[in-house]
Image (tube, rainbow over all chains, first blue to last red; front, side, top):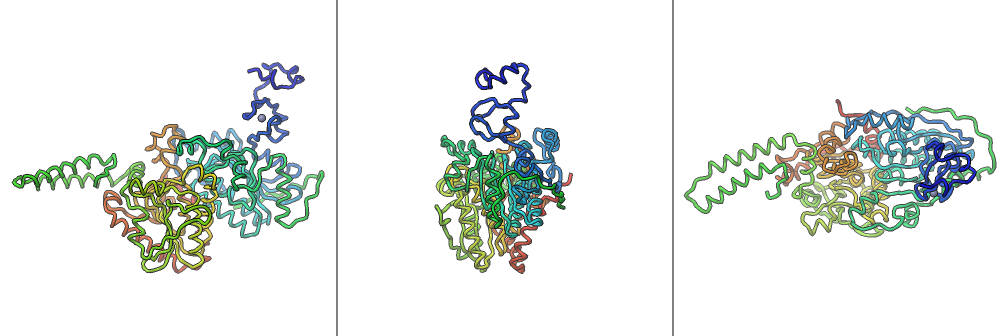
Length: 302
Length: 320
Ligand SMILES: [Zn+2]
């Protein structure tokens, strides 16, 4: 690999020799192969500065960028039964959970928060692909219900960022039951007349797509996101033919009428504020720099 | 009986021998094989009892997929009168994997919807093996709306390996169609009862089975993923389907303990396919029982009960 000479700016190249660069300071764009300096990548919301490829971003990093002054308050999610099926494949489910919790520092694959975006009060929820591929189990269902209840209580809109490899198989049928469960939560929001905006991020698949992630009042996707029910590999095996370029990607879905918009992460915040304020009959957002709001009280939902 | 499952091979052998003896007796009337054949019959039956007494989850999957198991069309033909199929999603096509229309159940007008797998090569292809495309779910949505408007109970019969994983199905919004069908199930103000008669495959099943009352035939299965699919993902080996079937807890008995389903319908000895008429009758009784419980409830009570049922689901795990 001669990435240093190919890609890295001469100034940085002169400071570090390849051997001295700690591995974690650099990420390789999986799309164009460019080596990206981690601070630069972080400042650009994990979007490749070279080709615009949208990489995964943790819910916390996303919310820090979205909320005014990076301030948001976490809403507690009721803890479900641990390992309801006593599931065991090659590993025990509780061991897999332990490892995922240690690796991410999170309880599970969904984070629920409330705060203000452009002085617009919002409840937001984001799925964490780094936690067991964002898979949907009881906790994720509880998170969506907690988010909907909080939104109804505070009369705030709900924005949901989806990302999931699908259902959490280790919770078997109870994972599947999160499809109707989360749908009930979305119905509570809609009956309260509150906007529900879904932002589909890479990848959103399976039962997640086939429930709460497709029921938004407005459906936005990040560029290049894979969005599907059945994954491309399963389809290729079934129909025994090669799928067209870009199949099941955000832009393809937009062309096929399945999405309202495809929006780059950098413009997402402004767009969400604009849309939500119109849906709620609020005046246009104040542009320019705003002081951070006062920290919001965390409200625990039972 | 011509179609034996692999674990039924010992029965096939004994029944085969009994049949041979009888054939011999027919060609040479002077031989007396009656006693011997009867003994073999008795042995076969004992074997059947012991095999079916405690079917493993994987064997239940095989029984649930048995080609001679009664399918949606068999139930509609036997249990309903005035069945009037209503076709199409008004957008793109009529999905033959989903049957549905107006009918009378014990004289009462209802809407019946179900997955149909087909019974021979021609009909299986026509029915796409019971794997619905978006049009099937959108047809179901339309029929549920019709039922809601005219205050007719909805009866769904679930029997699908899953939603069809095809190119066109994805392009036309398979996920959205399933999500909307599930949403519709939760919105209608009429009794919604569901029977899982064979395979309850993932989201394709949920779209019909988000019901006030869900019954399952004793050897049917209901799962988030097929055992083969689960095995290839978690065990990296599709041949580990027995282990996966075990771990997934997809049997009617486990799902009843988890309160995911409400009742189990007993199957005749040796599975539904060995006595189709009795099975169909038992399913009819279960539907009548579920409808009787729900009929006194008003619209709002029906909707609230359905939502509450799913909101509270999962509070109960399997006891260690
Ligand atoms: Zn790139």
